[in-house]
Length: 184
Image 1 (tube, one colour):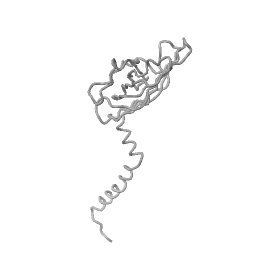
Image 2: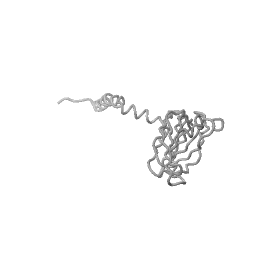
Image 3: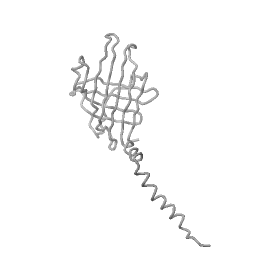
Image 4: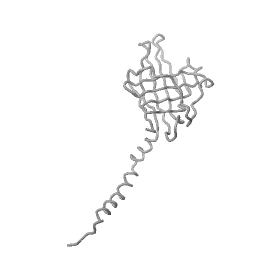
C-alpha cells in the first residue's frame, strides 16, 4: 500500500486548471465576448408611430463605439430613415454617417451627419442630426431632425458633455432596437 502526499489533490487541481483555462480563454468565442463587452452599440430597424397613420416612418441604426472611456465615444456605422408620405404617394430617405454614441443602460444618444438623400432632400446633405433611443417595452425614439452643423455641433468625444437629442416621443409599432451599454 503506497501512501500519497496530502497535497497531491491540490496539485492535481492546479494542473487541471493550468491546462484548461488557457484553452478556454484563447477560444474565439471567449475573445469575441471580451471584445463585444467593451463595445457600446445601437442596432435595429423599426416602424414608428406617426401623427398621420397612413405614413410609414422607419428608422434603422447600425452604430458601434468603443466604450473604454467615459462620456460620448467616437462611433462608426450608419443611421437610415425612410418616410413614405401617404399624401404624396412617395418615399423619401436619407442616410447618415454615425459620429458619436453615448449609452447608459437601455438608453442611447447618437449623432451623425447626412451623407445621402432622396433628390428632394438634397439640401439636407452635410447637416447633422441626433437621436435618443430607449430599448424598452415598447422601444421609443426621438430625433432632432437635420440642422446645419453650425447649429448642431458634434458631441465632444470623451467629454462629460453629453450628446444631445430630444425626448423619445415616437413609439415603435413594429420591429425594434437593441442598446448595448459597453460600460454596464
